[in-house]
Length: 452
Image 1 (cartoon, rainbow, N blue to C red):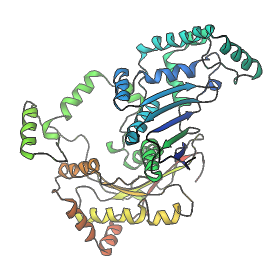
Image 2 (image 1 turned 120 degrees about the vertical axis):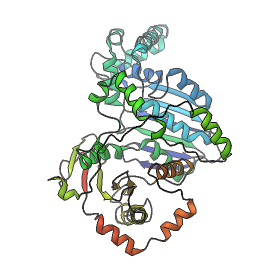
Image 3 (image 1 turned 180 degrees about the vertical axis):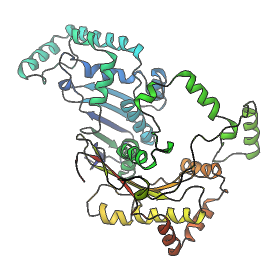
Image 4 (image 1 turned 135 degrees about the vertical axis):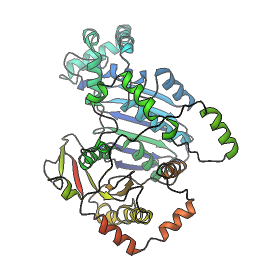
């Protein structure tokens, strides 16, 4: 038996792990409270049908691409629906842990559910039900359990023929949204992993409850400015999108004068430029204008009456409460010294480890996680809590210097960035706080609590 670990993510998923350093492979399994016992009345077999439907593609990949991706990374998958839980497991090589976790999350939370595939999935479910007639042992056990357990615990996982034939596409969508939720879900992992690294990867992949609460905070903070709009839109706005509207947006916004091409890595610069010119020279340049008005910096307490009153988003099913506080900060296009001071201030107050918030809330066990992050935009900026600081990996470095160029900032090496942070003095932090006081914040709470 290896070393055991347990951790609950902020969104309610329970992570169980057993470290087996001598193993040459790893495996993860997700147990989701979406078993046959939770099938709606007259809809037996819905849990099994939904699980089979999950592998008909995701938001990013169709069914064939998804199957090829699983095969490419050597991921061995199994799925099953029992009475209480639907399970999904993947076997992988340790070096492919991140890919396995991301594909698990993508399959379970971003299914495509193509309407044209419903009948094929239904016929497969009916075929499995008919095949059961050729297994007397399974028929006896099913009949025994149905007599022994009261409804709904006696529901057969494969369902009933009449129920399966009457399930609609809309019911599939609703059922997935109802049952495939973080709360009550168990993620188990075994293999030769490092616990600290594993926990960080799982949190990065699965633990995103703060995104929802931040959406509400951004909406309220920036409203009525377009920066307060949801990045993903709303159900109504997405349903009202037309092909012509999307094509017009593409023609207007995706133009050479509005884009920046950035790269990081070991490459030949001249060859890269030549290749870019060959591939992009046919792209017709067009003038484009910004589609949102300039932002006037304001104090939260003065801008909109009542903004200091916390907004509470009731979520009775939430495992934990999520609180987001946003307050004004320097813009990307603002004074460089203030931006440097803002980055350092966010690290001092709300860094992931060894910060004021960590020692005041996390270390004594008052909070699972308490962090602050500085987020600069074009003409404004924010100090935000519950955002995990992103490390200086290649991809984050790529976005960092890309945004510098987007906002006409000079290129700086990592050594120069470090020197700028080292040059920040206490007087710079005090000057920053005079212009952007942290007590001038907006608060949004998401969770089962009804009052703050």
